[in-house]
Every structure is written in C-alpha cells, then in structure tokens.
Image 1: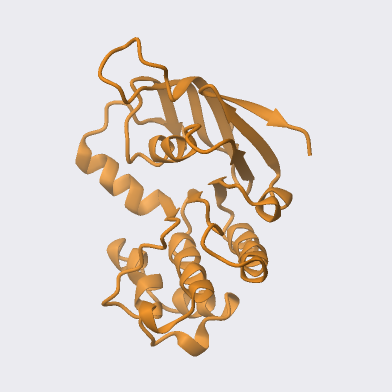
Image 2 (image 1 turned 60 degrees about the vertical axis):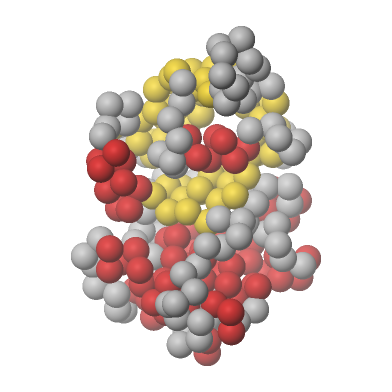
Length: 226
C-alpha cells in the first residue's frame, strides 16, 4: 500500500437482514482514500451511505471483505484494539453533533486530546481561533448556535490530527448560509491537519469542495464526473 493511502477497502459486503439471501447494503464495495483527500459519497436515502461510514469508521463490521487503515488489516482486532484505534487515528462528525452537554465548547474540542494523553494547548486554542469560536469557548453547547455547534464538532474531529475523518451529512441541519460557511471551514481544517475526509452528503456545496465524488448505488461505488 502507498504511504499516502490512509484507507483501503476491498470487497466489502454488509447485510442487516437475518438471512444471506437479503439484498446487501454494501455489495463487494472497493474504496481507497489518500492523505489530504476529500471524498464525497452521494446517493438516495437508504442507499447505505451511513452504513459505509460506520464500517469504515470501525463502528460496525462488514460481513465480508477487508479493510486496511494505514496499512494495518483491522479484521482480527479485539474490541479494545478497535476502540483505541478509533480514539487515536479516527475523527467523527455526526449529523446531530453529539457534543457532550456538560462540557464547554473548549472542553469538547480538547476531549480527544485529553483521551489520547496529548497537550490540550495550544491546539485547542488554535482551532477555536481558526473556526471563529474563541468568543464562545467557555459556553456550553445549548448556549451557542447550530453553526457554532457544528464548528465545534468539526474542531473536535480534527483536534488530535487523525488520519481519517468521517462525516455524516455534516451540513444537514444547517441553513444555506451557515452550511456554506461550515463547508469552507471544514475544508480548511482538514487540509491544515493533513487529514483525509470521507463524507456522506446531499449538499451541492459539500460536493463542490470534494476532490472526488462517488455515488453509492446497489451496494457499490461509482465515480461521478465533476
């Protein structure tokens, strides 16, 4: 595997029904993502975009297929190994933000750093400034706007400089103006951290900022011309 390839997936199959004859949500899917690359996955609702993110992000296991992250085959990892890897090398942006309500904006951003035994400053402060959050750093999630919550989620996802960030419809809960702002900030945060980004989206704005656009249909990915 090239040193620039963060993730390589081959022949991924995932079914959720009880028997093997059920249609596969992922059906022999292949995917490579390189460092610093932004990849957008589009497709109709229910096509399996969130399933793909969960499998790639080690939150769910494929029924068949192989996933290598940073050249390491993840198939035989114990739960503890997967948890440690997610904490250290992956970042997640959830559609519903999933910020901890008892932590301030600054503390939410710093949490991955603390969990990994890394210094919280100056990294947290840098991200607060870069994403326009310094003024609300000491507020709690329910005291800031939806756009500020989403920017906090983005900062948290990249704070520990993960190899790969997955984002599930990251602008799905935002109005058009706030969504466009978040797209630009997200792109800058990912580029500055030399991180790869895999996002599921319906947003034309997000698609327009992607290096590659892939359509998920009948369990497989196809390249969409820009």
